[in-house]
Length: 331
Length: 195
Image (cartoon, rainbow over all chains, first blue to last red; front, side):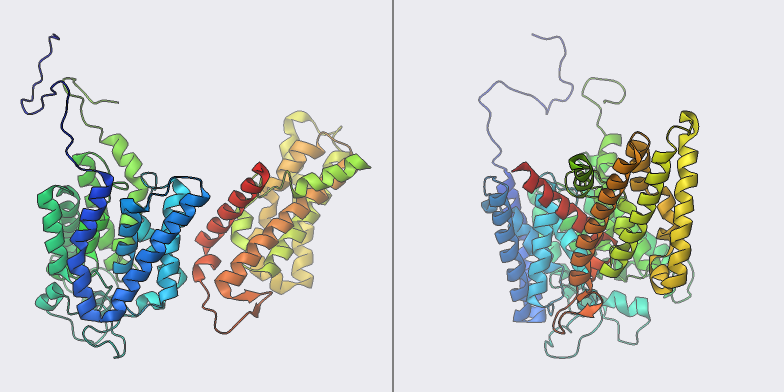
């Protein structure tokens, strides 16, 4: 017997046979997809059947692209693991309901072929594929990505998102907090229904599929910064003072809830350690607030997560946890 | 003669400066937004390559080894100034759209690479064909990239609209489109060469 005793009583490694926890990549992907369903249903109720077509187009084209590229690369076709399905689903949730379907399909193809498979497939991609697809569409077709159907009024002229109303100083009436919470506002298909997203997120948190570190640090940082600066800084501010910004409005509007719980927490593109996750979340929150307050874009969730994705290797390197029983930092 | 032709063709395919050696990417990314710009830039770079290769090859026995880089710069800068002034006089519109990238040929790594890697070690006739080959390869690469970017990103070829129904993907005309196009083209060439 070795002399060293495990210091942590909860961490005992017994001899084999071991019991497998039953968690696999496939299971994680499908459980997250299921957790996103309430928000999708809400989106279809709010924006009409067109929203469903957009989401289905994204999913279909993501799965087909994954199969095609894997066949071309001579790899095993793994579309049943649900990762392509989830990417398509998330991209669909990030698009306005009135986007042309071919555009949605193109964005989905870009997400899988360029942002995921070109980097080596699942587990090797640097950037969240769904967000890369959205960023692609945002740059390629800016006018289509800034036209939003009004809620519960599919045929009506397009409206603005709450963040656009604030940013551009429009005269449209701002939705109340309750409207924001229930999803009665302009925006992307899957981001408007905050209550449905929170329902799915709660399920994932309780089941342990996502940890609280990224969402909490992300949302808290964004809230604090918008509370301090959003009424003061930037061209669209109301000229108010510091510490008078509307933090609750900033949490509930835009894609912050969807991004913080479902996209920043992507297993492949977020840091490994708890400390790293906190740093990642704070960085995302900071960038989101900066983009919302000072940049030309009304919303910054997509770009802020992508930018933080790029620095994840550095975060991981500086937050290597201490090896059990050793003093000082590992590595 | 056969050797001379080989010096020419290697610059176009097997040692293409952009797709194989990955030199001169900065002007390639920046000016490949339209075929017109691509041809202008390619022609300017080819002229400078030709002039500097001839001069440096002819003077290679007189240039002291330790200060060869400053000597190259003086020769290259001379030809760049010629190109810049000629372009300003006879094609002001092209000069405006290429902007800073014409003076920047002075520090273009293709021109430097050929001067240091070839002209300094070979005779004049070989250097002429080497310069023409490298210049043609660079121009060809620019034309291919700009054809893809202009047609997809702006819906135009040679500045003429292809179709009214086409919705141009702005992405391709902006900087990320250039990186994406070059990456995909290099990948395709590698697939072809591996076979």
